[in-house]
Each structure stands twice: as C-alpha cells, then as structure tokens.
Length: 227
Image (cartoon, rainbow, N blue to C red; front, side, top):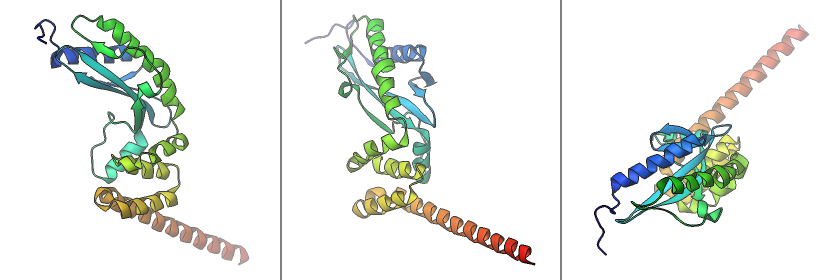
C-alpha cells in the first residue's frame, strides 16, 4: 500500500511524539533527568522506571509502555565493579505494563492522530497502575525474588541479584550465589565474580582486623583495671 508523503511517519515524527510524552510525564510529577528520560524517585535510591518501547512503521508509530524500578545503589555497585559507566536510563527490573493492567487500545500515533489525547492516556496509565506497581516492589526484600527468577536470562540479572543480597547485608549468600553461578557461566560472569569476591575478601579481612583491635583494647582495659 502506497503511503502519501503527508501521512508518512519518520524518525522526526517519532522524536516529536516521544518529547510530548516526556513533557506530559514531567508535568504530571515525574522527574525529568534528561531530555528523553523521566523517573519518579522514592526512598533509599529506588526510582519508578519508565520505558517507552517504540515501533516505527511507515504509516504509524506504536509505543509499548514498560514500568519497573531503577535502584541506584544496585546499579552503581555492580557497574563500578565491572568498570562500566552507570546509567540512570537502565531498569533494574521492569515489565510490560500490559501484564499489569489491560489498557485498551494500543498507543498508536499517525499523522492524523490526536497526539495529545493518546499521550494523556499514556500518562494516566503511568500515574496510576505504573506508579502503584513500582511502589509495591520498591524495597530489597520484595525485589530480590523477582531478580532471582530472571537469573537464567543473564542480561545482568545475576549481577543485580548478587548486588541486592550484598545491599541487604546478606554477604555470605551473595558470595555463595556468585560462586555457584560462576561455576555454571564462567565466561559470562567472570567480569563481575572476580572483583566481587576480592571485595568480599578485603571486607572479611578488615573485619577480622577490627575484631582483633577490639579484643586487644579490651585486654588492655582489663589489665589497667586490675593494676
């Protein structure tokens, strides 16, 4: 089917629609941290993550909305260990919003669409079901099992799982998970596993040193009291 030039959707059209989406999300209370990026900060470094997945065709643009959480401590921790740049645009865990709530017609834009109306419907979805879902998993205890279910996908979920355990203070479990997963996926996991184990070893040695210093100090105090 031939598309009239006035109906054709191109990358410029896609960009203009996305900017309208981010403008509207920002106006609704989401924090605009870059021109094409918004999120909603919670406590403890958790953010509601917004992902607008686009499919551009000659006659239309479709947006498939994703939502989840971006956890700053987790993301900064493992990317630093792997000597990679941290990015706020990457989700820690996210899913297709269609799995949360049936939102009616797809978010489809053409040259003749009422773009503002479709964008408004998208924003309402994020400010209702989207924010509610993100808040419901915005703590380490609830996030951990979600990450664990995806470790088989690789895609940085093993790193996030180990980092989540570490942030929870469950360092022995983090070490055990890392060693077991490394044994099964050496090529994939070595870039994280090696520096992570070194970190745990250093922290363990430091703790032993601190305990020895405390014990020595306690002996000195006892000797001073008895003298």
